[in-house]
Image (tube, rainbow, N blue to C red; front, side, top):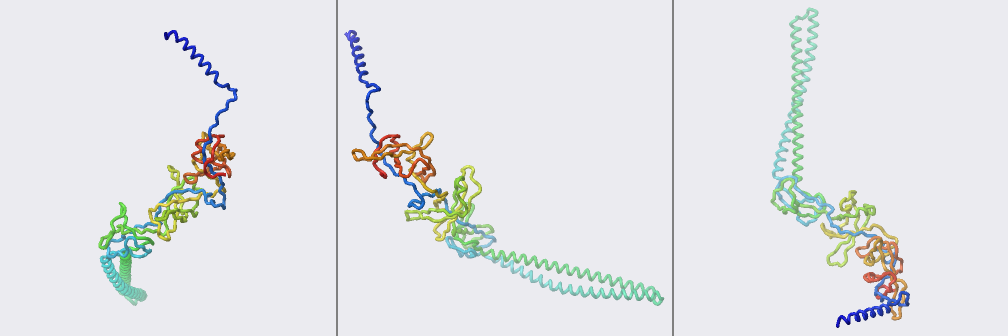
Length: 439
């Protein structure tokens, strides 16, 4: 039975297919496609920021970076001589002026050495006076001996003359010659004694000079027993190789090089940051920039002025950054070492600025684009409708993390389609404006 009906079923199916095809409209027919419904979007009117306007401050091209406050100077104070700590007039946290004492060491042994050396000097000086008197005697003796030589020389000449006239005998000539030789020998001996006395005097004077030098050194050690602050600042704990060491107390024995405390100069503080190497030409030593400081209990950061004091000539080849230091007056002493601040560097000031949300930019294969609303009008229901148009834009600097500068592609008064509506429109599509800044 089924086999008899099978040809009939096939014939019916074929007839149904032919009828269905006949119902498909021809390409050239007047069939109209059903339009897509308008996409709901929000728009914002583009406004160019100009100098002198309420938002003129936004024309500044600002680079922000966090930095850490460091002291203007941090001086480690160490003992220069050995001694037991006798007094500690300053404690941690105290303000100190340059020259004020921080500690006094026991000077008993130094005092004893000074007294002994002063006694030695006095003895040497007394000996010098005796030697000077002796030298005077030596000099007088030499003068007397030289006078005796002159007399004996004249006497020898007189005897020789008499001898030539047979008025004196030869032994008298020999005796005169012997006497002259003895006088000359005595002069040489006197001069040798004089030179010896002078040499002894010079040696004694050299000993006094050496003793005085030792005395100066001892007195310098005595002065260093009072450890003084070399700079103005705040007293902090001693430093060790592992960091902050144990506080020194009265009775501790200090040896040369042992750390007593640290003086921190916070009258002016520094902030060091690393800036992109391509930005270096925009800055110069002496420029003023802004630093933001978060203050406890205040919702807004405090703004203070900082001065560039150093720009390194060496860039980090790995990070491609350059070190910069800024100085901040710490008049109120409310900035402390290690505090985090935000440095705002003004790279340049623009003549004008069009700025849009970064999310409004749609990346394309070879460009960046945005959508704007054109032909804004009201429909029969009273809704604002428009046509979405794609615009290719050229972007400039970023403003924070959410906005970006537009160099070309947008003009003052253009209606920018805002995120997220811009993700659901296409060029030429009808849109319904439901929010944002309306024309």
